[in-house]
Length: 310
Image (cartoon, rainbow, N blue to C red; front, side, top):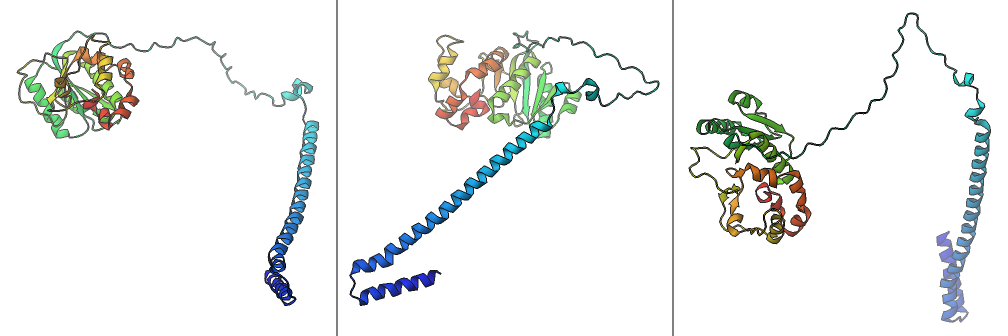
């Protein structure tokens, strides 16, 4: 049909030129006429589609109305049904069956109170050792035995971050072991803080010394700690958002100043913490005072590393 129509347009155009028609007449035949025919076709088919849609919509509405009317006629109200008709299933009675006991009356049970933060502990030892581990069984066994060799009166607490189970080792060596769910807490401050907090409560020592499998013990401590926390010296290290941290710290210690020397203390394996400072600084309440979104946006991802976060 398209090729026939095009052939007819070419013939009409040639006839107009032979009769000496102007360019306008040629344009009217080749361009305007197809547009008029197309508009007529759209109007015709569009009108038919609208009419069919209207008829279909009216049919659906009639069908819905009829179904609703039929449903209302078939449904019966519960009030119109007698109790005998409702109890259409008779209870099954077995000869010699014991009677069921009556349902117990409801008893009000008080919800247990949430455990409060641990009160200040009376230290039972000068040092307690917190081993933050995952695997490396040979290193952990070597570490535990050397701690017992040089600190025979110090308690040991091993926490495995979803790694190996050292309960048999602690049963043999007399230490405490806790297998925690895997959290990769080295990069998640809350579980790291909470686990160190729980260890401090369990150890009941004046100071908690945190060890990792790559630390080794060669003797007793020669210089007793005097600060609330101390670790490896990291030359030239500094922290951003110091003003924000100082403002929070001054709520606890008025006039606190975060010095460059304090920023250079690496709180990794081998660091020590006063138990009183752990129970204060690493409690859930204090943890939630920090705006971690603010620190993460203004700083870098290292702020979530355990060393930086502590």
